Image (tube, rainbow, N blue to C red; front, side, top):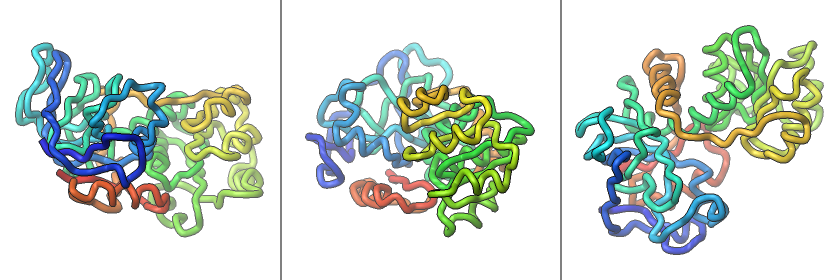
Length: 307
């Protein structure tokens, strides 16, 4: 099969499109013919070797964990899916080799949900990792109706999802972002504030009694500022800095595959309460260019590789 793969750790310069062996189909695996693969910052970390101590790694390595496509074949233990089903998956395995920047990807059945029918494959491919990270963070922060939640980096890929999911749950959202993204956040239902020095005071101007929960999606001073504003520190959640959030009594979230939660997110897309914005698509042959755009850090919406 054709795939964008690396044979040594590095950046976009080591990612090349080549022929690799078709992936194996284990008993609990769904083999998906890829139509689109979402690009996420963690893909770059995998390629540089930054996560090699956490995930056993084998070369040639195909990056990517987000996928939307069509079921090609299933393992003998899989009864939930049949060939021809349109699906999405956060196709993370316990090792790293067979990723989603390819014609075929083997996804553990625990990671697969039905593709939302109201959007195309590129939009669907942008949903799994960012959507699950947002949902699991909000659940760890116990966000529900009537809460005021502060979302740091609210205009980013995870942040936009968190804003929409929190609003759908009846929460009020204050989101940090650069001024150029404020109108976009207002359209999603958030009250925007500029990040940087004086952030706590700006948030208090909007929420004089403080906030009920906070999500750190950016790092830096986000946890420290959140600790000034949140009454119960266990409702501060970080997906970036486990050490800093533990010091203030908060919680760290490392997203995990969850088919039921992914199905919930897909249902929200079809119901019109959750939108996936795609900033740019690149064919598989230009996967390295997709990485370069993603790494610039100024993209509003998902970068997607189409196959």
